[in-house]
Image: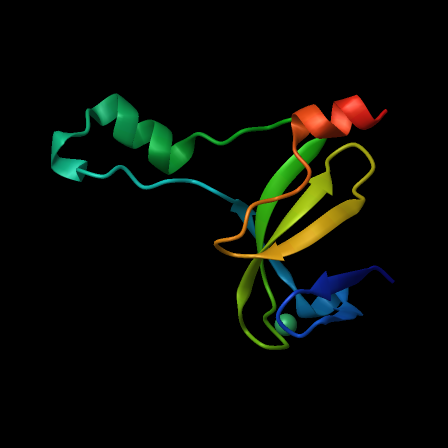
Length: 100
Ligand SMILES: [Zn+2]
């Protein structure tokens, strides 16, 4: 059983309480009417698919029902950190590679 740390509840909870919600830190275009179809399509449909550290948004569905972010290694599935929405990750692709 995988345990995930919820930064809102401030404790580890069973993975079945959580739902992944896709890539984190996706900025909505500031002026949608002035955005080209290609830029809007990129915003809606195209996501990163990195090998290594990936920032994801997760939802504590059976707990506090709040969203938070996870940095997860897509190779090992290891969760490297969790942090609240609006905070910045301390691990990114560059620092992860530098640490090895
Ligand atoms: Zn929670």
